[in-house]
Length: 318
Image (tube, rainbow, N blue to C red; front, side):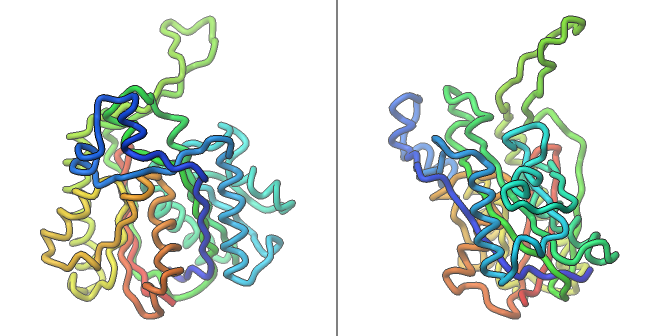
């Protein structure tokens, strides 16, 4: 392992949908949504494409890193909702910059950023890349049935980017999947295939909330303990646990079990909802902008999502 993050950026859609606005067409209200999820609003695309958001996020990350688009020699998209099935989101972004280099997407749902970080580490550590840009972006609004209260209240759209180079920041990383599809999925469909015995149009995201919640709680606790043991650290040694922003109750539950103060578990889900792969790097970028993350800080990043997947990284910020 030999990488560090040298630049970050984020871009959110301009339109914020409040709980009050959802209550105008859903059988719900602000108090119920807030108590169950911690979410007060979410950013939703109106006329922006996901490529629009991702391009702006990468531009900002490159500026902060003091690098040019021509310095990128690998682009990794972490997404499950690109503007096209093909080309990849990574290719779409590079096309706007006029850059030619290897580019591809990884789909690990809400664990996507950590999966992409692991992939970047592999490429840089073996010498196949020097400057990698991770583009973590999802437009969840295009995957939802907006009449379904169980899903439409939870998700938002957003993009974040990180520029990765050689360094000593990453101390531990683990990605895994539990091959359990039923709790959270979105069918791809099979187009207009006249030979298909059971044609299926493209479906909406479907979720068994209680199953996903139980998986997340169990996974977060296991991943934290595994990372601490591997790094020979105690929970108190970690400055920030930056968890995927899926539900405030999951994050508060992890904090309570570890008996740690709330400031070690930063949250922005109240503003943006669940942005899938974008949630962790958006939060990191905000914290850096606010001066909360400083050199030497120990960060534990934990993503968990459909698959079911999980990814955990331990970093000492450079």
